Amino acid sequence: MEDILGYIFRVKETRIVNEISENESSQEGNDDLPVSAPTACLTRLYRCSQDNSTANYSKYDKTCAVPPPKRRRRTSQIRHGCNGRIRIFVPNNSHGADIDLHTLRPIHVRHGEVLLHFTHKCGHSPRERKPIPQIIRDFIKNPANRCRSASEMYGKVLNAATKGDLGDTIDMTDITDDNIRYWWSLESKLIYQRNKDPWKSAVVFMQEQPDVLIHSYIDRRRRSFCWYVHKQMDVDLSKVTEVYIDSTHSTNTQNAELFGIIACEDGYGVPVAYMLMEKMPTDDSTLFPGEVTEACTQFFCHAKEAGLYPILIHTDKSAAEIAAIKVCNVNEMIV
Image (tube, rainbow, N blue to C red; front, side):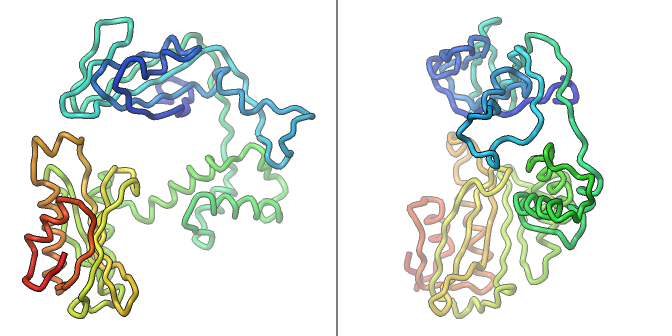
């Protein structure tokens, strides 16, 4: 998008709207923004990085109470009154959404489609991008500097620059954590990415791991795959009599739900199995009932095939998990 338009846009907010009155059109200075019709949809707003409205955070002067180490160190960019906006609309249910842009008749966006609304009132020169010095890129690529997070990598680069390990010509003033994160993420992808499809990539990556049992169902409508790490954790499943089962959200970029089985061994909780299952819209369960229960059933049955026969199972009020447990039930099992 940035290559096509020639401008850089930064995310402003993400929200779900149900009524016209809830939209940002009621706020000052946003009369150019479109609004959504009563059908709920997910919206994401981006503002031009050179618009005047994005310059408020950098207005420091000599009498400012903010300590100098906490102030923005980069050179300020020239701002314009372009009021540049990109707003993305995504229907939040299988019925789609009617989007009213105040310029045309309401546009119906079907499930699986995306509506993009772009406004830019004046042309201006694009944001100046200063390339990251090659010595910093080489520092990030060096296996000896490998780390788990972008913030940790930024700290290493900053520390190396302070000590002079990167040479005397490196100026960290215009190098931000976002710059480091970009190059760090590119290097990190070389470690785990096996396919452009993230689901296929994850399955192939897990298949390469030693002592990991994989069962893949990514070819189905609701994709999922499960993997079992009891051998890696040196857990004898035949001796496990008590397990904890739960799921969580917001752990990945694919909006997949992560399930886990934690075995109780000698009073300690040890992870033995995981499953990633694709999440669908809320009313999808009405159109395709039983898919979540089926995925959970496969997850628990494969654990049973691996030798897991617990007597006591702890879980929450998830109907799909409870139903799947009952399908894989043995007579001695207590839920």
